[in-house]
Length: 486
Image 1 (spheres, rainbow, N blue to C red):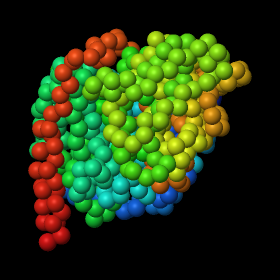
Image 2 (cartoon, rainbow, N blue to C red):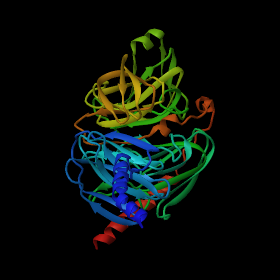
Image 3 (cartoon, rainbow, N blue to C red):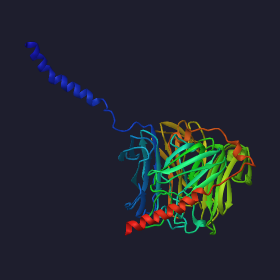
């Protein structure tokens, strides 16, 4: 009895001691394990207008508040936990759970440096500006590569929300620029379908062949579109390796190498600028990391458009090659005997590197890999982990989620860990801009070279099958809009 009373008397003290100890031990976080992290920055720009979007066959309208960009996140697998953080304040902006092929959008205020944390890979598209989704504007749309579900930009399986195309009204084919542009790295059969399954097409391509069309994204409210599909989420499956992108006008893309990452010797990119106005041109900025000869070729004919020899002095001085392609729809291959980086861009007012159009471009570097890039205005460098970083010859330490900025010009960056970099180009005042964000898996993906793509004599076939589907889809979309007004 005395023992029982003693234990009872001791219990409050033991309880308080356990409570004190537990308060000193961090509770398990409710945050998703940071398996996949996507960094981004929202530049101050013009406001998004009211927008229409086709969702599971229904036309949905919404009006973003002023001072925000749109962050669209698409799930690749069921049960994917998502959290979005302001990395300056550390505060959570939003959180959700996504299933495969499910998409949700979020508003991110101008000036926000943020990260998306997910338990599984997702597609993350960031867009902004009043003109990105304007279906009738000749300069609308966003150019970007679409990441694969496994990581990287070369593969056989993609789930994505298409970036907005240029002039998706398409009353004249000359003004339209496509948000689905597929390039075959080998003989393939490919199948593209939307989330409803009502739009479902199968085509084939020979190695080096390409095809294109306009598929559903968004339009300004009451805008007319000729886009195919009944939803803004699409899935592409192929029997062989392909690369897929949006080839909208006003491109600003740090081009991924065919062999993976953003430093390499083989590249493919479409650069379409056919608006005949003084000062407008499709251009490339090629920067060597090693001496060697670089060539720019037409992907369909293998004809050499430009050639340059980079010397050791060019590498030491961080010289770059500004390639003026002029006006036209260029489907390009770039090859080099030494490592290079490639920026595909377009100019306005004046054909020079100081007059690059509105946009952002997102890319990255692998651990202990130097990457060189050009920015017409500024760039943000995000550190994915605690590491040492050399920026333009200056050594510094950066912690995980820390970022720094650099000004215009050519820059050299190398870290002991992964770095994610976002180029910023205000152009004419950020009237439209956007890009898919990436994670380390997109930088680390590695593939063998494809020398056959650069050989002359390979039959290049572009099929017109999808174009016919676009016309049918346009009629269907117009019918749906009229029916809803009735």
